Length: 518
Image (tube, rainbow, N blue to C red; front, top):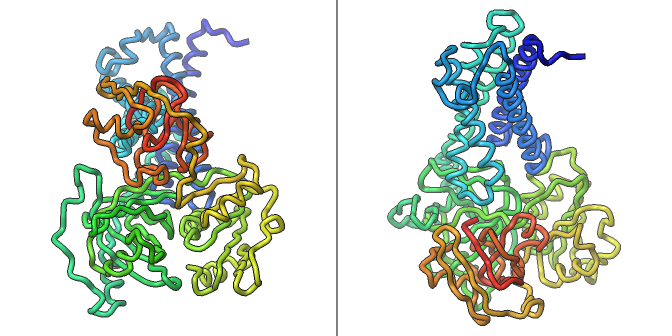
């Protein structure tokens, strides 16, 4: 049996935990860089890869904790708690030990903020996450300055591999995420006639205090009758617009309207965003204005991408789309690895009205089932075409989504809606007290008043676009209380799991709520 009173035992635990922790830390940073640059996109979908990243990071933290505890318990070295937690407290190799402590605290900061990322603004979280680079290089220097195995062949080889891997991945990160979209913009402008290239309005600051991003229309084409596809690139080329399949943006139109559109195309491209807009010729005027006024070179403001239709890890998928509902589904298909088991059921009235149909059939001939009601003489028999085992992701007409909700168990069905479901009958509104957690301000919200209106009366500046419970832009984190979800953004179970709500339409089952920015 091991005799833990022997210093040699703790020396072994300290050495091994330090080396294993260094390996996991480097692997975690390397994995994160590969996720950022989407090099791993062929391995699996993003959610699986993020789970692996969190698992590796957790193992690195566990090894660091083991390393520090073993140093404290080793009577031969006699480190105090202050020596292990405060830089330059230790008299033993003060610079080497201090670098290890700095690396450790950087790891803790990144790890804790990652656990709480749903409550932290994304720009803040991304800035903090850069501390992981500080951590990996501080730990490398710490190991080289105080490691007892420094100079041995195996240690030298391991050090070279870890440092080279981290450096090489960092170089890839810089190269792949600094690609300029200017060339693509010039090429796209050359494809349209001069008459179609509008004169850009004066550029505005892309770092708008409202969070809006000023973009230019880089390409415009028509993938189907009454459908226009627009590729948007930020005026500020340093802006990266990270998004995952299923995300959407709010577009601020020149006629004063705001409209939400699902992102389509390849989520690996963080330098541009692509939307496809169906001209509904309706009274709202949003889609018609886009078709008539947006040309290559036109500038407009958008809100950053919002994720409310996430593609979750699963072994088997079936995607169901009708009409313009193909746009988020197309992005999901692009994000899946070649080995993933999936099928697409694409429904439409006429072929010329089905955007991307020819491309999808050419790219995935064995995976796409097309049902054109104009050719087949009627609607698709969903009871025969639906996969009884797969996770089903659907976007399209209200009739399709309502049918799917009757045919498919809610645990397997994930939908995105264009029009909110009337859920007012699910909850009887009553007065409640709402607290804005960042300032402690409270407001009494009446039964006929929305929580969003109540918070805005306090002077709280919230992003809110549709105000109908569809777009998800007004998302808040629930600190205390129990929300009564009345929106149509995502499944109620998912919102409860994430601890979020949408105050534009949702209420509370309790007499109070404490909320904060999401």
